Image (spheres, rainbow, N blue to C red):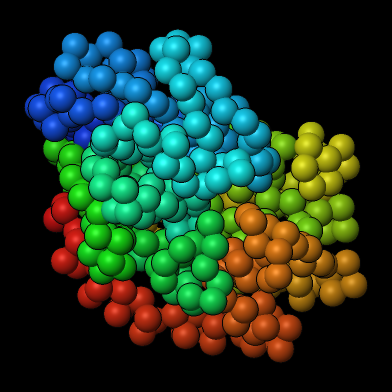
Length: 404
């Protein structure tokens, strides 16, 4: 196998992109005048100068910021995965009340919104259905529709591009906080486009305003633009992590480490019982496009197998334009399942507030993938079932796309 490193590509000049947040403050601040404003944000809610949205709205002379709402991982991104936040607080910089939407409630209560007329949403998504931020948005939209509040969504880039669509479509009986709607694993949409889809096709029906970006095109990866990158969650540190995530997130539904507690989450995969060379050799023998699996050992500092050396692989994406992360991730799980039948285990519930279903099924949005593994169905046959639903989804999403 000849390896062509991604970094050896000729780097194109980055495209200047004006973020939705910047357009709101510079060109559309009138939308918030004479209104009491709540902001849904986290540490990645920054402009090109890395000024935080809460600070920008708080000091704007014509914006009355009354409340902040934090998603999973908190408003400053300091809370690790699946850790339920208790209580609410006051933001240390703005002295504005902070309400957690990953606590005893995942949607703002009527009391939280008593002094709020309009909710502004400005958060960085990662282009995968299995990520909670867009469902925090959907929950806020439902409450806004019920209570007569407005929602303003400041759009940001899909970091793994807005063209590629891949994986299976979530089945409604497996809806959860990591997948509320029948979307594919990799949806190829921006937050603003998803908000339109949720509001119109899935009939939330709130008073919704999208503030689009200027300069962004569907084929852009995040580093094709000058948009700032701040890790949107503690285990999503880099664009490399986001590139692998739509596939390796499936390991969250197993007892195999997905690399949490290491410096390369979602790129390092392993368990104490895995022989790294055998696992890597079998993965590379699949000849998956655009990727090489390097055998390695690693020791997570926390979470699964914390303090224990794991054998496994690091995913090296060599050509992201042909790499198929969802298929690769499912292949990795299947191979671990097939190679280590006596040691491999599915994760036990609960997972993301779901107590009665297999966590792998909740993540995958179906029980069919797990059952196919258990029945010995080949990978290509599993992926074949995704093709027609993906074509139908591409047609479904078309009216809601903002960028061409």
